[in-house]
Image 1: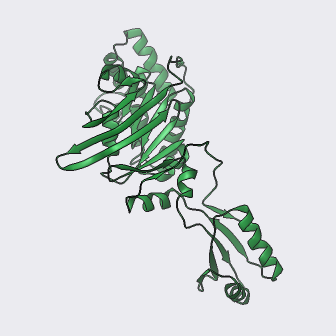
Image 2 (image 1 turned 45 degrees about the vertical axis):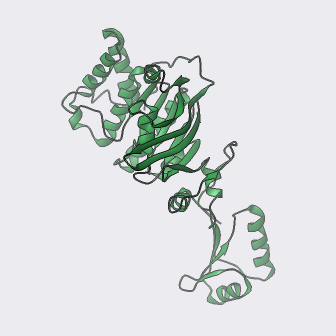
Image 3 (image 1 turned 30 degrees about the vertical axis):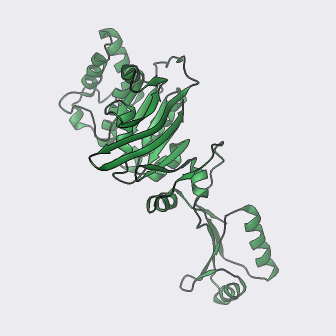
Length: 340
């Protein structure tokens, strides 16, 4: 995808928090959707809000983007008070909702020019911004075709391009890749990464856990109206037990010998595989390998499983814990399965 010709100006409050919310509450009738959530999101980062359907993710986005009012709590977005200065908040943000805002009856270029008019850009500036963003999102060739002819991925790219017409500092993306094929989803991830390099803050809601793992600097899991846990992807993974080492054998005798000698092991006699509880640390792995060598047992395959965000999500949303994770620099990631 071509790089943007349009430069993003430095903003005077670039060192401030993009979003700071305390005690946000929202109910519909007797159903509490948000029950006093706190959010702190640094400028120039990607924040992901995870949660099952109906958890309140979209409600949080609507409140922070001034589309609806909270029943309680306080929030500042781009340094502006949500209640006292909603127009200033709107001038600083862009929103891409779950459902496309693209008008399929007009062309992609016309959709962009309409958005430029809504932002009160002059005719010349509007055409310049439109051309630059269409090029940036690889839509120039399709610019004069009806948007109804676009693929799902193209419509989503046009959606985000339209959001950027106003040069927002903070972008709310509410499940932006829902319904996209894997290639289009990965293209969208690249777009999001490039946005952040320009200093934009991205508030992302998603049901794709891999998406949050790939993109987010910090993740919060929303469940039953509360933040069940928050931290980097690696911090969240360490909250959940279930890591193990898997030893697989082709020699039944070696398998039986290892199964007899090892303690706290789960057997899979059909696959000739043993599962040992493990935190996946280098020390624990070395100890196991040294022990196997000392007793003359050789496994044909060794893999290390560490909990992933799927495990975290299911553990946190099947119950109602509230777990705080202290902020710290995100450690280097490790894969779910590391084969020896």
